[in-house]
Image 1: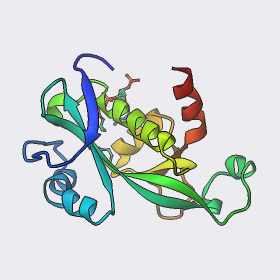
Image 2: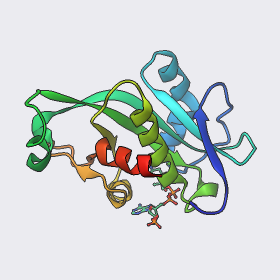
Image 3: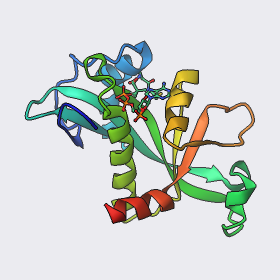
Length: 171
Ligand SMILES: CC(C)(COP(=O)(O)OP(=O)(O)OC[C@H]1O[C@@H](n2cnc3c(N)ncnc32)[C@H](O)[C@@H]1OP(=O)(O)O)[C@@H](O)C(=O)NCCC(=O)NCCS
């Protein structure tokens, strides 16, 4: 990560009105919907704050989910017990404010999300994302995510957490 210093925290009661990633659906969700989803325990939301300020430069959401075993590639399922579903955590949304693009914040939030899940007492095998378009798929693939073999869901990607946990341990 270069340039500005970021830290991440739960969204809490922070004002979200100034955040703008430029993708309407994501901005609308963050401005109008995310608090309700948090209250209903449908999602958790973490925000990246710039330096010592309260300016929100990015956010991501996490929710519990599962992967049907046959949707994982054979080279992975070979090493897993034949359970029908495998526990996972979904990054439902992830976005960086337009003023903070290209400074490593998107990558930093992915690592932060993985770290939170790995450090949780509740086990999850992988992180899952639903990329909104081809560019987002490219972003996640750049970070090592692989496509799930779900028919009609070419934009659902996953990354096993075991390797990331080992790397984080070495840091
Ligand atoms: C996609 C997004 C989160 C990237 O955030 P960012 O902070 O600008 O990205 P970073 O600076 O962290 O980029 C880190 C790395 O990813 C690469 N990258 C960024 N966007 C990429 C893309 N679309 N395709 C491939 N690689 C990409 C960068 O080149 C960089 O590579 P490097 O570390 O090897 O130099 C941001 O552009 C965004 O919020 N877009 C709108 C919302 C969106 O598309 N969200 C995706 C989930 S639906």
